[in-house]
Image (cartoon, rainbow, N blue to C red; front, side, top):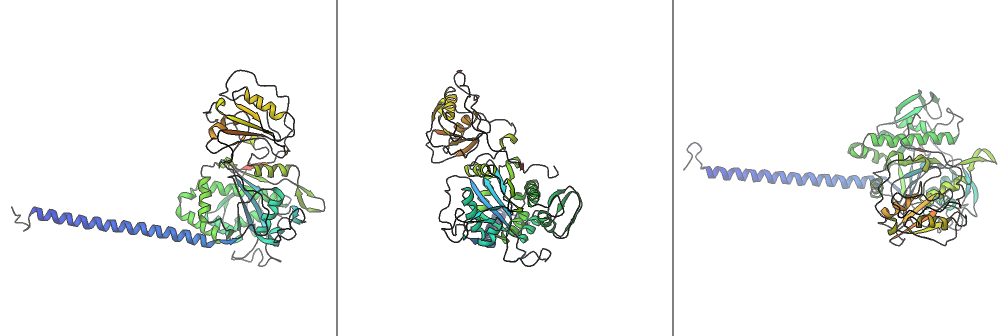
Length: 489
């Protein structure tokens, strides 16, 4: 039957509709492919652009004998250069005599388990031993000269700072990033400003800022003046300025979290473009590596990001300079090197809910190592673990007396077993070692290590041996602050 109103059959009209729908689907498919191709092209272009922004240098230059990189922790040295180039103003001067210095020096330590991070500020006025000629592999801190810390950058660039730091501390530096004044300003503006808190009004012509007291949000220009000013607050010391810089970095972390920076492509790109445009870095620290590091710490809470300054004391030869205070500085560097809690950090961690212990003590082989030079400590602690069901024994190694607290080391995949062992020691630090035999957990007892206590899932009811042997006390605790602390506190 034909449809006289249209002059075509129903089947003809149905076929025409199907053909139109097919064309529409094809156009939609082509459009989707074009959109995907465009997004992919933009992503690749953006990645290449941001990577191309970054200048490069070799951090191992002049260093034939570097510390071993044996852990999965990360140590990233961040250097703030005081070069004025590119800031669009001559307010801070247009030329630096004899080249730039390192205005800010931060060692960012990210633990192997990615559950904590520390930012260690190194005072720019510190007097330490340093290689006389950083480009000469035979020139080291041992046969070097006494030099102010910020002069290392001026004398031999980032590689000289790395060589000096590694020589003094034994810490392997994985990556280095250098950011100048221009980059700092642009990054703050990329965040939309950063909140600070001033205890009193400031009017600092040298820093080019005039600010009221109280809580306020600063743009890049004023933020640069805030972190650099010295003479108008307190005694004008570099150590007091470091305290303000640490408070400012806490505020940056809070702002990035509060504004969900990672979920805002426009702001994230502006921030990354600003950061990379003014950054020089080692050859391995590209955008992909940066994103990989960022993803690995995405679960880090603000109270797990800690700021600390290398302990110092007056430098006898010059009252305007400082030197690292021993043994407190040694304890700090030891904690970073061994990926353990900072001195005094365990006491600030609080008493949150402990994870459930899922591995029975009798299933765990424990090797106990005494690093305190207190005879009999490892034997005593092995006995305390043994009566609870652990298969515990003593490791016969020469103690160094350099570590602090208790470190529980475990092979990859043995985290649950390590947690059961760590439950015996308050403040114990967990650490992964892929070279450790599977099925073995190692307990290292350092300065200030507590004696073992009962674990919740212990086996047997025999009492623990009396703790007659005590670890020597740890050095003076180091003052720290966490990123979640109120900036006005």
